[in-house]
Image 1 (cartoon, rainbow, N blue to C red):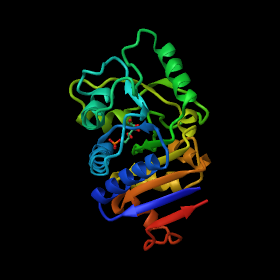
Image 2: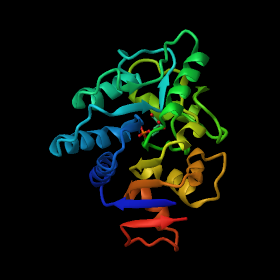
Image 3: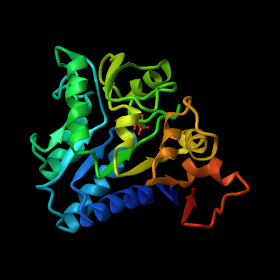
Amino acid sequence: MMQVYVRDSQAEANDLAAHLVVEAVRSGARVLGLATGQTMIGVYAALVAQVRADRIATERWTTFNLDEYVGIGPDHPGSFHHFMTTHLFRPLGLGPQQSHLLNGLAPDLEAECNRFERLVMASPPDVQILGIGQNGHIGFNEPGTPWDSGTHRVTLTAATIAQNAPDFPGSMPREALTMGIGTILMARAIIVVATGAAKAPAVYRAVREEPSLEVPASALRLHPDVRYVLDTAAAERLFSDPRWDRAASVVEID
Ligand code: F6R
């Protein structure tokens, strides 16, 4: 089942996403799947604030990140590892033994993908946080990726390079390693956060159109516990659907 939450502002959506993660942790979640990107900056700021305010213990958390660029390491300011250190690991004091990321500098990238896949399969996330690309990608699973895919190496599409290059310090890598759609679907619960008008078409396609390989996020319709957390801008296309109850704070979709 899928639930769609819409909040009036990005800040409120971020707070709700963080609240849902904290609630999951309170209910026993210890393994968190994590995403990076612009959307996650506000989500992690809200999560850090709530964890601190509620004095939530993080010592027993284990985290897995979705993806990493090929050819750059944790110290590179454009790497997802660096992003995580800045926005979540350092503020919450999560140590390297708790936080698993793909190594984009591994000499054998295929072996690195297999190592990571085995690790995730041994203890899949209790909660996986996702962002969504404007083309509907999740992780770096671009349109056309099989839904049973495991962790693998990808060549980034022109659309994804165009989306991420403005924020990338230096020249943008052309390849990445990513959990597959099959890997992502192993999580017990999934929270997708999307804010801003640029995400409205992808959100609509993922939530309302027939599932298709062309929209990787539509694979989430196969999962029994998915929550979308949106601001009104990202939900705009859903609102244009006459079946949509705009006044509802959460809409359930089978
Ligand atoms: C990054 C990731 C990507 C992003 C997506 C949205 O780890 O998994 O799928 O979630 O590209 O990125 P932003 O939030 O920058 O729009």
